[in-house]
Every structure is written in C-alpha cells, then in structure tokens.
Length: 214
Length: 214
Image (tube, rainbow over all chains, first blue to last red; front, side, top):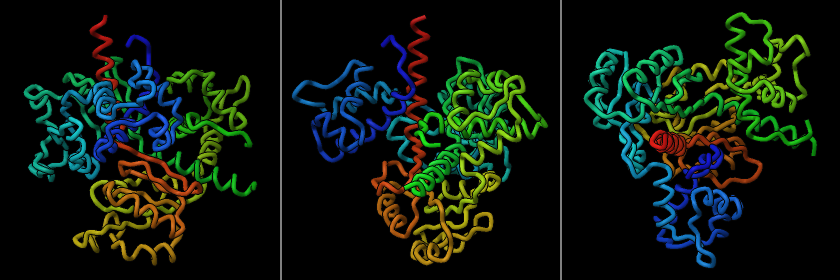
C-alpha cells in the first residue's frame, strides 16, 4: 500500500464494514458486487474501484466472500487492534460516548473519563469512574492511551489538546467546535456538530428552492 | 444558482462561516483571500473557487468584507431562517444536543425532546420538558417542526423516522448507526460516530505504517 488513498475512499470504508457486518449477522456468506451495490446505493464500479485501492478482494463470477471482506476491511481500518480511549469532558456528550457499548465491539475501549467539575468526581458511567483533570498526567503515564476524545467546551479545548499531546497522546477525536492547531504527527478527526447541522440546513433550503422552480 | 454544487463545497462552507464569525468577533473588517487562506489552511485559489460557486464575494485589491461575506454565507446555509428542531431520544446524546446553547445562536431552536422511557417523563433539560412518544403526533400538528434529530438506538430508528416523515417532517438529523431508507423528498444528514472513529483508527494505523517506512 504505497500510494496515497484519498480521504473520500476512507470515508466510505466504515460504511462497507457496517453493511458487511449486517450481512454476516443475517447469515449471508457471499455477495455479488451488484447486490452489494444495490443495497448500499453505490455503483458496483465504485465499490470495485474503492476496494482495488487495497488490492481488491473479489473473484470474477463469485463475488465477495462476506466474512473475508469484512475481516480485511476491519484490518484496513485498524480494528484488529484494541484502542484505548479517554474522554476529556464528562458532560452529557462525554457520558453519551462512554455509554456506547457498540464501540467496544469494534475494539474501542473507553478506559477513562475526565472533567474539571468537582461535582462529577467519583460519578461512574458504565463502570468508568470520572476522574479530575489533575489526575490525567499520572493516568496517562500508568495506562496506555491511544485516543483522547475532546468533549469539553471550545474555550478549553486547545489548551487541553496541547497538554494531551505533551503527555504523548497523538490521536485526538475532537468534538469541540474549533480546528485544533497541533503538531503534524498528531492525527485528528473532527466531529463538528454545528457544521453538520448547517449542511443539513443548506440542503433544506436548496430543496425548497428546487421545488419552487418546478 | 442553477448548477449543482458539490457536497464537498457545501462541507467547507460551515467552516468558512465559523472562521469569519471568529474574525468578526475579533473586530476584523476585511481580509484578503491570502490571509483567510493561511488561517484556514486552504489554498487561496480553493477559497475563490468555492465562493465563485455562489457568485464570488471578493473585490480585486480589496479582499473580502468580513461582515458581508459572513452574512452571505449565512444566507446560503439557510441561517437567516429559524429552524425548529425536535430531538427524538432523550438519553445522554439527546440531552447533550438540547444543552448546546450555540445552536440557538445560529437559529436552530430545540423545541421538543421525546423519549419512550417513562422515567424521563417531565424531566426538563434547559427548560425543555421531555415528552413521551405518544405525544409526538399532537405536538407536530400544533407546532412547526423543521428538523428531527434521531438520537435513539439503531433498532427503533427506522420506524421512528418513517413515523416522523408521515407526520410531515422532511429533514432528519440522524445519529442512529444505520442509513435510513426514506422517500426522496426527505433531506437526511448523518452523524455516524462509529464511522468517524473508524476513520480516525485508519489514519492512526496509516501513520504508524508511514513512520515505520521512514
């Protein structure tokens, strides 16, 4: 895998993984690219192209072996490793993340919850105790942490992100409503809920305009 | 605006809006496309191209008037209207959404919170009372609802989405971990947190591989 694979392709891979997982659960062993295509509402040629980025996994006249393809995409997505996640910001959103049992099925284990609010000290979410921010450095020294999720207000996010990077964490799942300025070796994935809402709103206005024109 | 604008462009617009808002807050009146470019880490030509989709807003030698551009992008994104949102699923995630005061600043008002759990009946989140699902049809008849956010488990999401559409709601902000099958006139925006986490994980693995090669 030497060439650079576009983030657009990467964005589609979890969706393939999700659909293949559902097929597996439904007891489907193999599927043609046409069937997969009609289920996923992606053209068969797009599917072939996407998978060819990773060497392709289909066989002419046979289609795809669901279990094999599911496992291979899982490896591509790094789901054959366990990832330990700490959640920094134990408000509603942080607690929502800690409550997602499905993350664990994919190997994403939430191992710590941190906050600055003393009222949350000792509160436990699905067995994970909320710790105070002062305890963060020691926690990171003593426990492997692969990913930090930032679920605190925007105002504190930049400083906390820098602290996390100094502590050696180099993957950030950012829910704070800003683009973090971090060293290049740090991998950041943003979930900007307001941006998503604005895209929705754009598409609502657009649909209204399109309808008026008709 | 007759031509189709790609979703990739639309995805960047909220980010422009966010940066311009910060510039406004900082008292900046005008900005060159080069300055905007270096702040946003997008090439100046990309910015010009994106904005040209909507007619372009810059003036040679002057750059952009920040307030004007902010307002115009706001209109493009439909932020000059108020949008009433109901949140269906009043667990942690639903409550987190109801607690985001920033949505209101953009005209997104959360006007209702619904759940099936009787333990939540009457609980109030930032002044918004949790109602039971049985009350939904009446609520939608009596109140304008522009968007429904789905924050309940995947298993119920498809049926609830269909119910919402039958009640006349035609914009869904979907947090449930599946792709909804809805009539074409319905606008859907997905926030798939697991997909986002898998993208992060892909980029972590990729970085490790790239580092090993060096």
